[in-house]
Image (cartoon, rainbow, N blue to C red; front, side):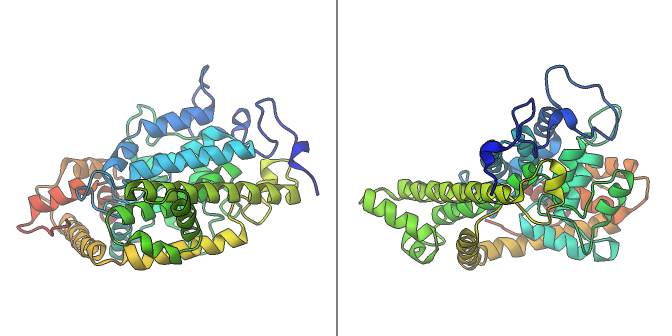
Length: 395
């Protein structure tokens, strides 16, 4: 078996199977190269300065924005994902800037009110092509961000767009129209795996939300420390912390458990990915894309533990009475807004009117879905209050 110590490296110090910025396939609209930044660094900067990135501050992970200041939002979650993705990329000697770009933009397509918003929009859009948050992310970075004079979108590199679309693996089966249409314009090789950088961002997302949803659930007192003993990995961390720090304050205990959980998962992914790379012996990004399996992933034993954490969170957190109450109210807000925007022509918000002027296909339902998906939680609530006599209390 080949050791990673013998892996060949490019002039940028990255492994041969990394995405090398100097070999990028470029941008859809030609732009001169920056004298001070690589193409992937430039993509990361454009993502950070985008409107979609700023909106993540007031988009929910699980709890609605006004429930508390210390719960995760899409923005804080994305920053946490970026930190983990960068650590993984560095350990595997692939491009950290590309991994960063994908981590920071991976939630762009999410609606207000977490997954409930996506579920409702998908239902409402069934006769019009459905709604998928990954496809919406592509629409945002290629169409809906409208800040540059010479093009719509952010004009990101091929590798960044590929990673955004395929970070969860090859796109097969029922492919969203957004992917199909863009792929006809610029082939993203949908049936292959994504780069290692994209894979780093994808598993970093799993690591971050499992750990931090656990933290938020404890903070919200949806479950107690005594209930963690039944969770794989988490129960082990709890035992270590209790033995090492008897009588520790709850908030410190919570943090010590979560950080150990993150460390264990990150270290497992690194070891497993290096073993997979040693077995595969890839010499290029093409070898990674065509190897027919995900390289950067949990080991089988950690995958089992991670599934146990997800089951616990589903039962104790995502289906808790308080969260279900928020979900029911959020569903009504999204349905009501979609209905009134679809059927009324007067007194529409300026943002929707601007989208209408740019919409050349006259696809009003898709335009409305774009507008609602871009809303923050607070804006969706205020719009509902403007248009209706009674708005659900999500607190």
